[in-house]
Length: 93
Image (cartoon, rainbow, N blue to C red):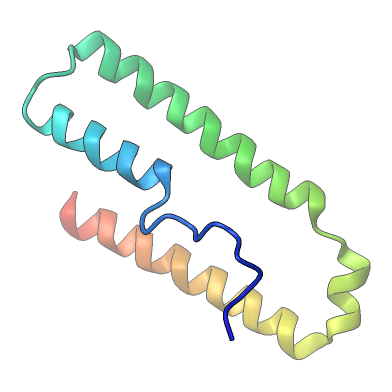
């Protein structure tokens, strides 16, 4: 049957709608350059803080419990993504 009658989640999360709206406004030059520059700096700090938060919540002990294969996969994926990004920057840059 149907679930607990709770409210269904939105089709698109609010941050996606906000991102698309701001990207559109910026693409049409409707956001002043100083505001866009400030937002770019703030977004870098927000990304740094969010990555640090993930690192703080990560338990190395629990990762070791998962096993070496999973850790090797995580390391390989990280290296692949790093190489992919650097190659993309080099080719496009």
